Length: 197
Image (cartoon, rainbow, N blue to C red; front, side, top):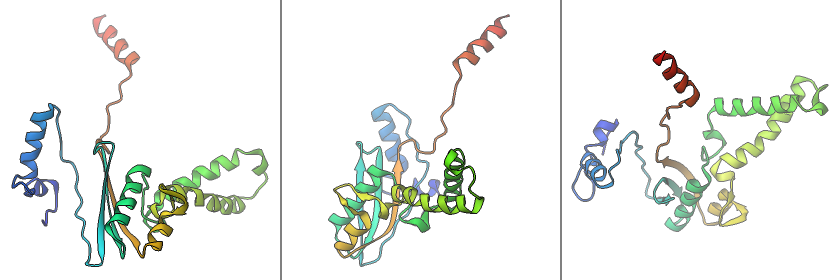
């Protein structure tokens, strides 16, 4: 499908011949809860690449990865890692610059509050923060994470040992990105009391 937006994607036919829109109506009626189709991503692969798909927590989190040069079992292991460990990017290049800068500023602020660092110049703190970013990348970049099936390996090493390379990753979680209405019960009661007066 060449769908460019969610409206076009809803008209895509599934393997049973029904459109995504029709399936949403059916599933909403079955479970009795509203289901909305808010986002999608089109994923492609070349002939020497394989998909790895994994659903976690009964389908509440699903990840799809593309791995080059390895088999589907390796790709599925990587997809499991992505679903369970929630990396934000495949590698450091994929982490948005604003996220890296925010993390670096948080590290620097924490270091400034440490009495051991109170007399250190800004450029030294900046270099120290850059060094501490390594831990952030190890936790948040898929290929740098410790492999969940063998913590003696990183994901990158596991995939390389099996002749492959991680190309891309997509992860979806139920409810992800929905802004939840925050209610302050005390304010609500006060507003009702003022309205009654």
